[in-house]
Length: 499
Image (cartoon, rainbow, N blue to C red; front, side, top):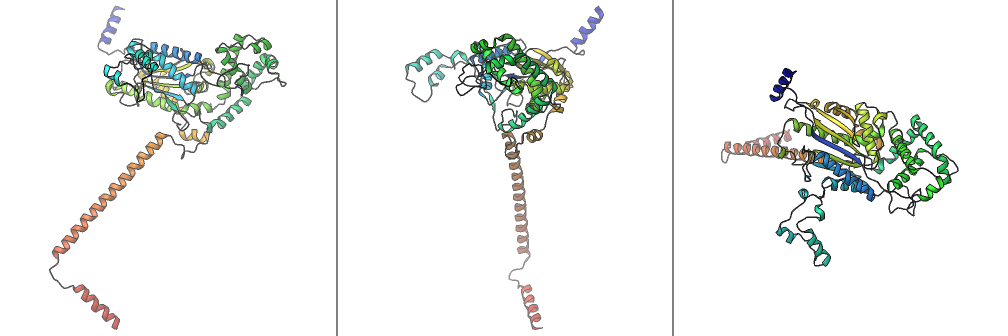
């Protein structure tokens, strides 16, 4: 045994034996927004269970708090773990943050970043005395309130040494990341959900079970005569209930009329949504909506993942790694229950996992995290098989595969842009994203410049050639020489005419 240990020690010392390394190389997080107001409210801003809200769908204080704390947790795991994966101060070239073009996801991302880069002395900005003197806007600041604010700021750029980070919006004209928020594709997506709701046996059976348990209580409150609720009606009811429950709303009238146990209903509504997304959204064999909603982000994810692994293998200079946004260490996406679900189902299909074993409904502030780790000593001859991709959902590990298996599996499932556009009915000629337009413009410019240069070269060469020929002709022609050609022609023409 001692001899064996000595051999291992020697091999390790000379780096012959592969060293076990748990080193983070790249990170992708996709999280659902925090707690929000319900989506289904009436004109008086009253939800289905009688609670009044300010605006439908907006992030609440509880939702902001959720993401602030998730940011603090991620800072502990990815910054303060002693492995220095990310810098302690925000570096815009290390992290790319994307959000859907909806308030609750934008505010969720901002709230999480406040926790990721909190009010610590090490992350604060310091202004010089000269900067403090000139750091006033071009307006009159001679007001007591502003003067007091200046005094409180001291040398800080912002109160409490806040760190602001850019969040990139996925707007209606940007189809590079996803199509979830695009109005043009809603009808096509709804058609898939409706078909699945009517045909998938597991969902049909679950809705019957849910109705058998709750329809009597719901009928007492809603006073419905039909007594049955389809999957979309239950979606509205459970959506309102979870929003109220997570905000600790009393729901007094609803409770008095139904007598329901709220904790039990909370668990059942969460299970309802798990079944709703697993089978209504993605119950068809093709997993159509998972491909529609995730193919574009997965293509972007694989692109960044490959660049980070390649940079790690070639041990490029760290100082040159982040001159632009093409090689981030971390890709963040602030999304929705449906977009996180789409990623989960997409990966389950791509990696051949069992959906029933690992799929869970993304609660408020749930997070899918993919960590690319190096487990061996990396050399210039290393390949993607020397890296592993470990998937976590709310800190529970759901898979651990080699990077080459992950990349090959994902790439085999990605739908092309043309296939997504065909499904949604997009007009590719008028709805190309900005990057495509920019690339097309650059290509057209290069072609035009090439044509122009070729024509200019031909023109110049022709001009030089003609000038040379004319010059040579003039030099060979004797001075004052009669133009015999003209005389001959004239004689010939006269003879022909006469004949």
